[in-house]
Image (cartoon, rainbow, N blue to C red):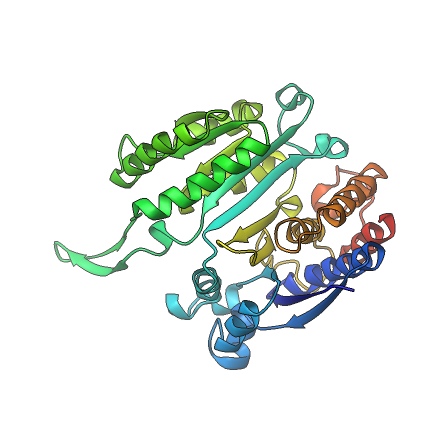
Length: 357
């Protein structure tokens, strides 16, 4: 029997609660599909700071590098907000992406039929459903560029630098084209080429690569217009590719179209099979420990793990079908419930998905 080795970075806030339920579903799926999983916990974020004084210990990086995949809960919280930038929990997240070469972040946004009423958009805008994919560059751009504090005309100032090499742009855009080719054969490249030099390079390269994918229709859109179009006419999009900061913002906006950020999984991939899988939402410290967080985004992240890193697409399909089945039964956590609807907690939702397998 094949055994897959998973490193679990539960992290902070609701992270431990949601990863527990995701691993419950993964183990149940493994048992039904004829493979096994071996899970090893490791530290990241605030939990790592408390134990080791560092947001990403070397031991964690080493464990991730010898794993078949990595599952992450969430990092951060107000307890660590006053630390220097390079010592905060979020620094651990940026470093793990860089250490593992995770340059591509895939964020699907799907409106499940049972949750149409949870979307803030009018029913006619959703049409017969919504299924879009945001492909976000993850290890370059302004989050990794030169930054600092200085003084201008006698007063404090700060700067952050957006920089991309042609190679960084080519690899993420080429991946996005290959994904779009397997989906709806439409790719929208989002930039700010009317203002930013880095975006002009991005647009040039995207246009050049389009010739290699004649079956995919490429369009370009400024990021401000893309943000507007996502809520005005979201069904015009199939696959979106964009830089680090624009992808961060647009995918969070897309999450609200689905009804809740608690429903959105993500996959962060490198050039090999290793990937890091995490929900799009954060650590939600305001509800941590109350057992009310929605674990579905993390459970669906496990489905992405099975599909992209573990080579188990049928197992991935099984989990996604189980989530759909649970939602059709009317089971809801607080974030996806309509006013007056009964709610269940984190553990109950995880167990319901496991049973639905």
